[in-house]
Image (cartoon, rainbow, N blue to C red):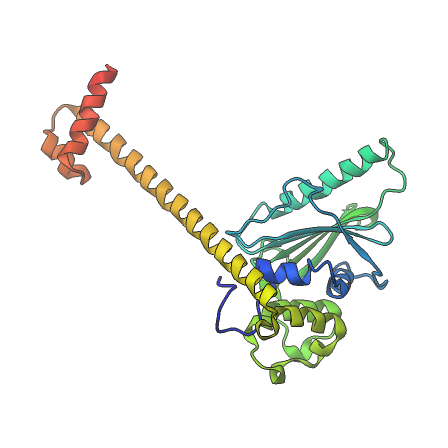
Length: 295
């Protein structure tokens, strides 16, 4: 998935840079506040947001997968953990539980192990790839319920958005949640304002789209953007190199084991062993010498 393209006017919100300047924009939280309200399906507007940095160990950037995580609170004390996941991650739900429970334990410790009056914790996962094949809906809200679907507790709420399940046409987009998801999926495909849906003029979306417009970037923002691309390119190359080295090491181990097994037969010449495995004769001789040392 290429989230950075010099030919595109608007940067994808799914990219780490796009996520930072929209969801993670500390100087202007209009988009974030409205997006969170839509994601948690609350009729009550969020008035203020406070970002909390480096509070939960492990909420870090993974450049290879393009993940940026966000942790913040609103004016009532509600706490929000937002994580973007671009690649496949079957254990993503377990990771969400870890983050939410980590935060819950932190709150309890700070409250001297009192359980009353705890703020609500919303753990929100935005996924480019579906992880819940048994569920049709693209937006899911999970709380603690019994076998009769009766609410037991909603102090911790887990929300998932699986972007590839969102198939609505523009004419069917009505709610703020659908406007948010539609924008996340399509903003980087648009080049001119004439292609804008009418709801992109709404203040909260217009604010975010302005941050993603490469033509409107200041020199400072352009530098940050290009540095992000460069950093990601280095990270991707490093990861690809690790994968290639791992494959090479795995292949070497397999060939070595095969040579050892054939040498153990003591019925084949060195040349026959080498030809059978497809390795140089010297490779077989090195293994033979090592085996002799180990005796």
